[in-house]
Length: 74
Image 1 (tube, rainbow, N blue to C red):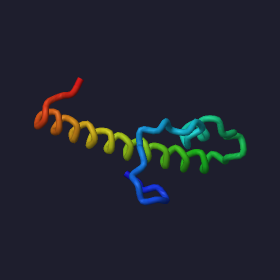
Image 2: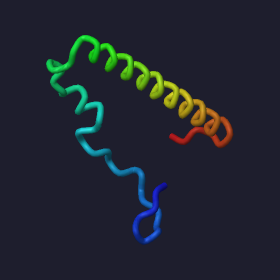
Image 3: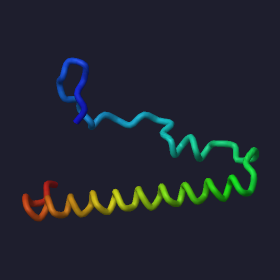
Image 4: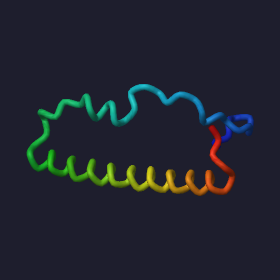
């Protein structure tokens, strides 16, 4: 957890701000991009999707291990 200015732990359960990066990307005008630029953008986004999936899978495995060790909290 990050520390606030007073050195106390902040609560990471805060709601995420609206207008995150994915929302901004989805609303961006693509007309100015060339075909090559669009291809590069697709490659970059596919790499990011793969990174997010790896993180999700690792988080799921971590959660499953914790549930197995401590029992699942409902």
